[in-house]
Image (cartoon, rainbow, N blue to C red; front, side, top):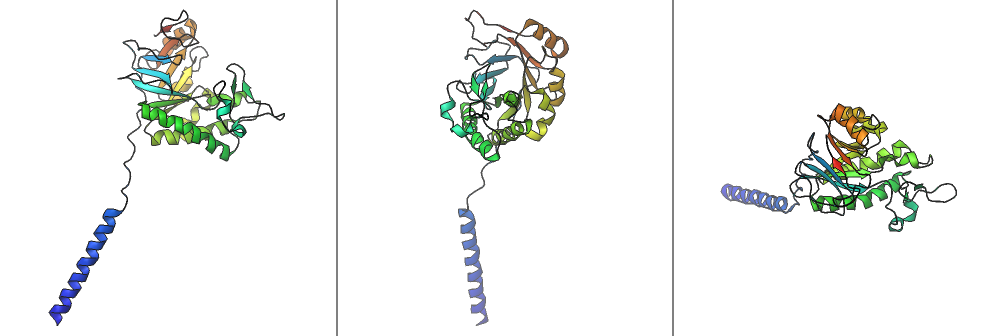
Length: 271
């Protein structure tokens, strides 16, 4: 009788163990963690190709292109996204309450580029804006880009006092979190006044237009440990950037329309 009871107990234990193993094996497995984020290489040959893609010169290691363009194979590719303003003519692609309006109900426009600003003033609106922008970031990841350049971080300076730096930082933090989840580095575009907050926001490098011209390169270099892509648009700006930071930062001179070779205005020079 004792032997029989022992046998039954043993069988029951074995059954429980077997059922447990089946349940464990059927549980969904944790997803693989995203690959490590890779920031741009330091002090590298740079080209800024927002006006259209073309074969990079032999010295180029880092290339910036619009999110709609294919990557340059074999190089470190940065994906440009207009994140804080809409492209000209694309205001209709956004929910209208996400476009910033003044007290008279008129759109607040970046007059230099004819781009309506996005309304970042509430957490709900920032979440909805980020949801749309994140689909573009996903597209950059799928295309093979290594990093994101979200433009117009400084849109609050053109907002007629309606937006604040905190609004901008809050949106960019959302974008940084998503970019990192897709194994993409994310850069700060201009806005030297906010460079000191880069770690809080979650930024990996900087893209600075004309920091040589306006004596701001040191601000970015200090905040981002020299991981700065510098784009100058004047010979004087290039001279100043190269003289002081030419051996530390990635520096390029481009024409203001960032055109492709063959254009009468095309310029690309380095230190």
